[in-house]
Length: 65
Image (cartoon, rainbow, N blue to C red; front, side, top):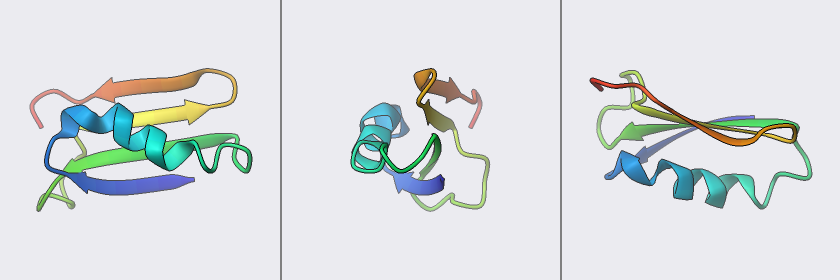
């Protein structure tokens, strides 16, 4: 599952991702949550949170965005 969200504070990416992932984790093996700044949805997301059954949560920060 891939989810794109807009947030005022992209540093809250882990909290946002957990709110999306937790109710759905029994139905998916992997969930990617891309957190964009509000109003910049077409640009590269500055944060990505990947959740998988194997590795749990992994946060990736794309600097400069």
